[in-house]
Length: 211
Image (cartoon, rainbow, N blue to C red; front, side):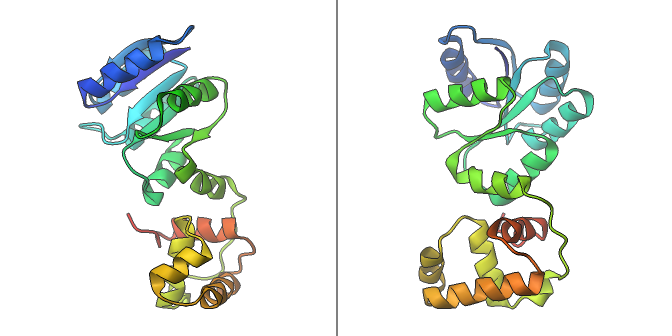
């Protein structure tokens, strides 16, 4: 399995290279510290997987993903990120990435992600998985605009999109769990959606989530 590494920090690239090349049948075919070179190297070497730092210099990982996807489907792309951001996860998926892994993951999980992508699958860190599920859900046809929701309903929908439970949302907003459920039901009725996945997708599409 041939891997391209693109990360602005040489120490991170060195550690990833050591992790990858310690596995049998894995090799790093190229590496770079910036976005434009990552696009060029991906097209030149056609690796099985490209690991892209989301914060690459000059051109970030999401734009690199878009550029690679315009030219080839040969390489699967894994975004390597410091923290979870619903907005960024959605943008990465929309650009064509099939993996989104946090830098805090253990080495074995990173290797598992590379192997899964190289075999044509998708891999997401657990905190990104619910966003990926919503993204891959059937596209709902929304009949309403965010302004149809009250401020509190927007708060509840945003927190649902961030993966919070009803109990957690109630604690954050200092309201009862029953009130959270009421706001959830009211929002779904107003937006003409019928599942939590559709509600999450709506929140992402309409940028109700925090950056």
